[in-house]
Amino acid sequence: MTWHGLLRSQAARIGLVVVIGLAAIDGAGLIYAGMDRMELVRLAQARAIGNMVISIYRTLLLTSPADQQQTIAALKTPKGVQVAVTPDPPGGYTLAPAPIARLLRADMSLVPLPPGQRPHQFVMLGGFGQHLIIVGVHLPDGNWLDVAAPVPAPHPWTMPNFLPAFLLTALLSSILALWGVWRMVRPVQVLSAAADRLGRDVNAPPLPQGGPIEMARAAAAFNLMAERIRRFVSDRTFLISAIGHDLRTPITRLKLRAEFVDDEEMRHRLLSDIEELEAMVNATMAFGRDVASSEPVTAIDLAVLVQTILDEASDARPEVAEKLIYHGPEHLRVQARSLAMKRAISNLIGNAINYGGAAYVRLEPPAPHQDASPLGTRAVRIIIDDEGPGIPPEELPRVFDPFYRAEASRNRETGGFGLGLPIARNILRAHGGDVMLSNRPQGGAKAVIVLPV
Ligand SMILES: Nc1ncnc2c1ncn2[C@@H]1O[C@H](COP(=O)(O)OP(=O)(O)OP(=O)(O)O)[C@@H](O)[C@H]1O
Ligand SMILES: [Mg+2]
Image (cartoon, rainbow, N blue to C red; front, side, top):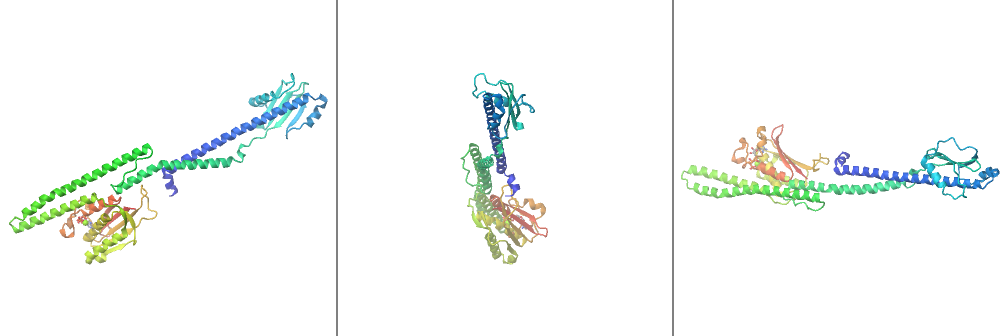
C-alpha cells in the first residue's frame, strides 16, 4: 500500500491519533515525574543547608570570640560553601522566596540547642534560581554568621533511564493501541467483504452474528437484507418460470388445434408461429433458470475457456475460422461458475460472429497496479471486436433489453430471440462484473467484459 493509500485507511488514521496521544501522555507523565524529582532534590538541598547552618552556629556558640576565625577555617564544609562571621547581616542578593525561607527556618528549628540559645534573627537570601542560598544568623555576641552554599541545578532529564523508559513505554502502548484499533476496524472489513461477496453471489453464506453488540446488530441487519434480496430475486424468477410453464399447456393445445386447419398454407404459417412462440417461452424459462442458477463457484481457467469457445465456433463455422483469433495468456485462473460463464462469453462471441463476421478476442489479466476500485478489487477484461456494421448508436441503450433485436438482424437465421445479451449481462453481474457494448471507430462492434478477481 502506498503512503497515500495508508493515510486513507481509517485504521491507520485512528492508530496515528492514538499513538500520538499516548506518546504525549507518556511524555507528560515522565515530565511530571521529573519535576517531582526536582522538587525532592531541592527539598533535600534546603534541608542540608539548614542543618549545616545550625551545626556551625552551635559550634560557634561553644567557641570563644578570639578563636572564631580559627574554628571557621577548620570547619569541614561541603565544596563551595563559604562561612564568615561579620558585624553586619549578609547582603548583595535578593531575599530568598518565602517557601525556601520557611523551609530553612523549619529545619533549623529541629536541631537541638541548649535552652535559651536558639537564634532569633535570620536573613535568607538567594534561591534556587540563582544557584546560591545565603543564610545569615544573628549570633548572641551581636555578630552575624554568614553561610553561602551553592545549590547546583538538579538535572532530571539527564537521568540515565529517562530515554529508555520513555521509548519502552511508548513502544508498548503503541503496540497495544494499534492492536486495539485493528480489532476495532476488523468488523468493518468483514462487513465490506460480505457485501462484496453478496454482489457476486446472492446465495453467499450469512455473516456470523457474534462479537460486540453493535457488530452483531449490523451483521443481523445485513443478513436480513441479503435474505430479502434473495427472496426478491427468487420471487421474480419463480414468476417467470410460472408464466412460462403455464403457457405451455395452451400452446400445446393450440398446436393440436392448428393441425385441424384445412387450408394447407394457413396451417403451415400457424404452426410456424406457434413454434416460435414455444421457442420464446422456452428461452424465457431458460432466462429465469439462469437468474436462479445455484451452480457453485469454483476455480476455472478463463483463458482455456475462451479458447475452447473459439475452437468450438470455428468447428461450427469453418468459413469464419480464420477470423476467430485469441490473444492473451495461456492460462488465467479465476473464481466463477463454469457453465454460466461459458454461456455468457459464448453469447458475446456468437454475436460477434453472427453480426460481425469475426471475433478478435483479447484477454487482459489484471494489471499489477490497476487503479483500485473502492473495494480494492482488481479485474480481468475480455475484449471482443468484430468487423460488422456495429450497432446503430441510437439502439445501443436498448441492446440489453430482453427480446430486443436490431431491425437489421430480424431474421431467424442469425439467431434467437434477443435474450443472449441480457442473459450474458445477468451472469456477469452475478459474478460482480459487467459487460459493455460500443462501436469501434474503424467500424464493427466492441464488447468489453470486466470480471473482478
Ligand atoms: N456484435 C454485434 N454487432 C451488431 N449487432 C449486434 C451485435 N451484438 C448484438 N447485436 C444486436 O443486438 C441484438 C440483441 O443481441 P442478443 O444477443 O441479445 O440477441 P440475439 O443474438 O438476437 O439472440 P440470442 O442471443 O438470444 O440468440 C441482436 O439481435 C443484434 O441486432
Ligand atoms: Mg446473441
